[in-house]
Structure formats: C-alpha cells, structure tokens
Image (tube, rainbow, N blue to C red; front, side):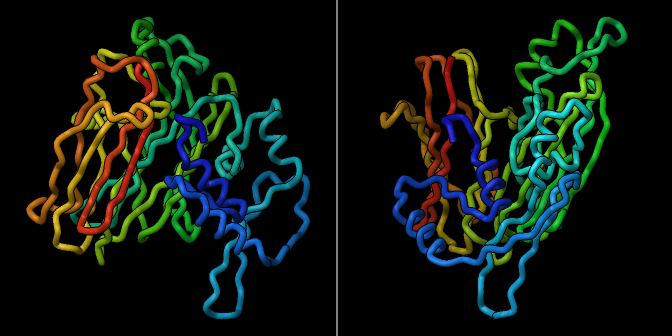
Amino acid sequence: PGPFEPPGGLFHLANETGGRAFTDQNDLSKAMGRILEENRGYYLLGFKIGEKEPEPRKIKVRVKRKGLRLHARAAAFSSNSLVATARSDEPADLTALVNSPLRLGELQLSLAPTLLFPEDGPVQVVSYLGFDFVKLQLEDGPEGTKQARLETVVQVLGPNGNVVLNEARQQGFEVEKQKLEEAGREAFVRAYVAKTAGAGHYQVRASVRDLVSGKSGNVSAVIEVPNRNPREFYVSEVRFGNHREGTISFEPFRFDKQEKPQYGLWVLPGKDSKPVALDARVLSGDQVVATWRPILIDKTTPPPAFVFDQIELSRYQPGLYTLLVTATQGKKSLERRVEFEVR
C-alpha cells in the first residue's frame, strides 16, 4: 500500500481470494518462506457460475481428515459481475457491492473501525463510516441549507465468516451553506456497532449510494479483537481524532501546522503481572523529531486502558511523518505506527 493507504483492504482481498496479507514487517524472508511452502502443493477446485447471478456465491470447503488447517477463498463471482457493477448506468446493487473484494464505484468513502470494551458483555466493534460531503449531489433544503440523501449497507463478519451485523439504512443529512467546506473537509460520519463473538480478525464492509445522483461506492477494513479471558497482551491500531469529544479522523491523515491532532489507542495488558511501558515518538524518515515521556500502565489501571495524547505541529516542517508507538510488557514488545502529513 501507499503511504496513506490502510491495510484493511489488503487483508479483505487476501482472505476473500484464498491468499494471505503480510504487513508491519521489514524482513520478508519469513513471509516468502511461508508463501513458497504453501505453494509447493495444493488442490484446484472449480465450478461454473451463472453469468446473470447478481451476488457472489459463498464458498465453504471442508475436509474429512482431522488435524488439517484449510485455507481457501471465501466467495466466487461470475465473469462479468464486477464489470457490470462498476460500469452499468443502472443503480448499483448495494448487497453485491458490499460483498465485492474490489473497491468499486465513484463515491469516496472512509471506514475506521475501533473497539469498545464494556465492563459486562462482549467486546464491540464500532465502525465509523465517512464520506466527502461536498462530492455528493446536494439538494436545496429549508432556510438556505443543503441536503444529501443516502442509502447504506454495513456488514461485519466474524473470524469464521459468520455475520454479526448486517444493517441497511436510508438517511438524510443537512448542513448550512457556510459550513459546507468544513463539513467536506472533515467528512460526514455515521457509527455502526456490532457485538463480537470471540477473538480474531473481523471484516467490516460498507456500500453507499447517493439517492440523488445514483452514484455508489464501497469500502472495507479489518480489525483484530483480542482474547479477554485468558487475557492476551494487545495494542490496537493508532487512531487520530478528538477523543475527548468522541470524534475520529480518517485516512489519509493530513493536518495544518496550527492544528494539535490527538492520537489514541487501546492497551490490554497480558496476564503477566508486570506493567506495560508505552513509548511514543515521531519520525521523519529515520530521524526522531519528537518524543514523549513513557507512560506506565500497571495493575491499578482497570484493563483495558485507553491512552491518548496530542501532537503540537507548529514547529514541524511540511512533509511526511511517522508516529511510532511501542508497548512493552516484560520481554514482549508490540509496535504500532501510522503515517501523517503536515501541510
């Protein structure tokens, strides 16, 4: 992916097509070794799909022999289904679009899943769906406002492919003309909440249609849900946003020098009784340009801990930077990094 491109789409595409995605590692020898080992031998199964089938065919492959781990693609498409979805002048089928492993359509969408850890009950995946308000076809509303009308479909799939959320909405948005530029810059957002059914990687998929222009688009992301019992050492992806107000920013992360963006992440200490040390720094290439005092998370902090801080950008030169957060508990360290641009 490019410097601002999230890896969630890569995970989704790999899982849907029977492949694997390797990220967050500079040593590719282990990844290449796994790829070569898996491709030493495999079974190729095939069947024909009707040309006019509107939705992908779900695939589930089983084997009778015990002790084997099976890896196969999750869906199959007819030969012209993707072309028809991408180019047809007819309104897009949002259900087919949300299941597509490819990013299609004309609308620019953003998807930022994060986690909530209720005191009682399962971990929740909260998915923030955003879209550029100024690129929608707007209608005149009352008292000089502008309105947009959208249809959305959001799905969340669990580690075994089970659907934990499938929600369709028709909704309208209204904004004053003088706030239109600000609304477009920050994106318009709706949140979707799904209760998880165990640890693992969850796929979040969304498709949207502008009911005025007929334009549509889709987006997907992947988020990992940790074990809470027995507890495993876990650090979430870094998210920018105003965490005091409960708002979130979308990639690509671009900020003006006068801004003070906040970053935040969840930390779930493992069953090890040792404290977690959290270290954050900003890099320009390989050069460290800013550091923060380490934060200690010990047993006096109820797990999980949500940690956030802000970055003072006034002394930064325009360019690309990396926020690197390292969490260490005992001998185990986890790194999370995110790219951002200062203008």
